[in-house]
Image (cartoon, rainbow, N blue to C red):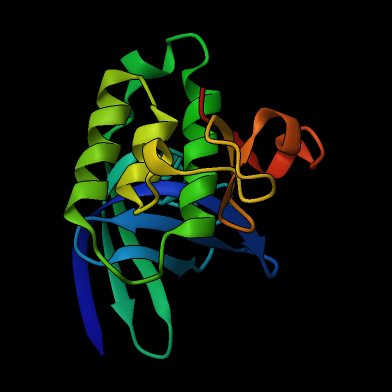
Length: 178
């Protein structure tokens, strides 16, 4: 049995079983991980107040058969940033991109620093996020037509698209880069 204590940014969660939650974290030491929080859905859960999406928390995780969250304490809820118009929507979008694109259990100090800076400043630059993840939109061309003026990144297929080609796809999968 291994035990880890690390700083984590909450990327999202989903309900599991009757009383549990499954959390997606981007951690400083372990990269993106998915952990189970037994009793996380209960109203009296000691973890719930600390694990809002986009919070920075110190978490204690135990690995036996699976990663299990045993403790969490919020370090920063970025209240000042959350009050900025449009911040929370952009932060949620960035969290979703990370959940889809970033590899599991691969720590990336540059990505960690970018996330902390973005949450503290209240500004998410999607071009910079994609670049930190290893995709270079400055030198990309549209995957479909070859146009050099790209406007979208399709997180599902991980391809760049121009404005015209991007208009042909479901917008839920597209990250607007302009």
